[in-house]
Length: 349
Image 1 (cartoon, helix red, strand yellow):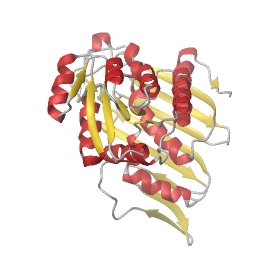
Image 2 (spheres, helix red, strand yellow; image 1 turned 60 degrees about the horizontal axis):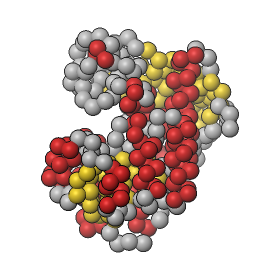
Image 3 (tube, one colour; image 1 turned 90 degrees about the horizontal axis):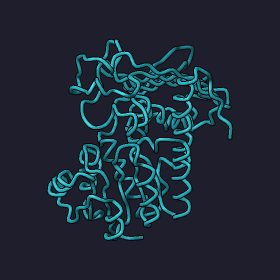
């Protein structure tokens, strides 16, 4: 294995700068960010100047052809995740692709096949898996402290949190709204803690009630006249092992908190809420709540990048796998399909 990982970044926007590049820098001499590509030349050049990146491209294909790279971060809008990732894998690069995996389940399957064919690592940017609360709860779950987890609840809700930047409200480029943007984070986290059970049936509903009209925004002013995604998604998954999960995700909803990102798990030996972490059990004829007195403070994005680098340099399997990406993308697709048809979607494999 190489001692230094040569990395290229495709897409030079906010997530590349605030999550990927800043944390590649923290890896010190283990990482060399060799190139950045963005369709907007000025964006790529400004990013390169800020992070001292020597090579700049407006076409990622040219970057992959002209620069010898070991790994790539894919930080583009969702529409381009699949083609960019598969091109990078074909060029012999390991890939960290931002969430969601793709626009469709078929794309996610092709990405998984491409990674297997190339013999390269493909992992996804589900940084919440690396959060200290998630890591602590996973240890409790793996030790059997919650027993059989048969029910879960996922919340990814904002009161008026429609992003006023980027392409988050453009269905053609994103594939959807809060479900595929923030809901996918909490859904993946819940599935990860539950052991990624095999889904059987999905029933979903989506709404566009607030995003397509002018209103107060706490994340900037959004283009409400061209708002083409849902502003709320709700639904339920039943798994083949009998467990069930209820999901609610919204960019805008008339709720009390400005934002709530949380996962609730219920098992036959205990339950838990994730943010903040509380574990609920019955011990010695007493109902008890367990809360951590201390959790590590290293950020989840920092750990995500650090562990991706470790995987690339040492061969350690990544925390998020291509197969899980396929399952997750099938669920997202099923939610939207159920909302469109008004019928439950049965998932067969």
